[in-house]
Length: 229
Image 1 (cartoon, helix red, strand yellow):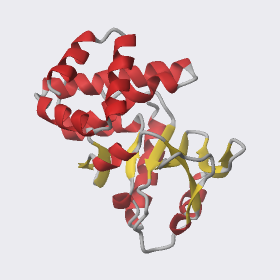
Image 2 (cartoon, helix red, strand yellow):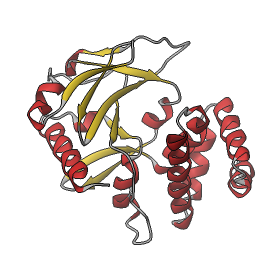
Image 3 (cartoon, rainbow, N blue to C red):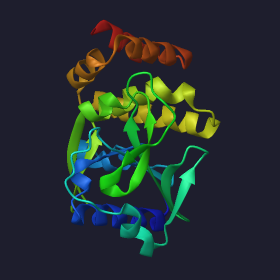
């Protein structure tokens, strides 16, 4: 991770903290790998990440009683407000960092943006995000209070979605990151937390986890998960 990217990320998080947004949203995606170091507190844990994309998951309904224009909050840093694809999902782009906003897709789903008027944005609905919101931790990092998915939820989510990735680099990055976090959990003897979160997710999602792990020949992890159903 380049220092410029890291510094801009921290500045964005600081600004979100100052206006009270940060405690209401969940930082997801590859950046969680870095911030999990404040959870594991282990010298052996690798925080290396290879992405300039930072994703924020917004709970639905979004219980935030202020109105803040997110773009105005970061515009002076050099961000541009752009639209992703033909559907109009808003993202904020900087040469060193891209910010995207996601919400859990509910029911049959649809391809329309989900408006978040409190932040003057619209977010992209995606499947398999509900249990990330249902299983979060908070870490004190860089003088910030940041909500993250529980590391077990993060790893299991990646085990569900990595085969849906069209770009091979993101596919490989998802696998590598999920395995790194999962093995760190085992090193810290968090087996009970893994089992609890795995057994709470939808039966079809559990089936998908096992199916996808079988495709990458992670038989030891499969055995661990199936043995503790």
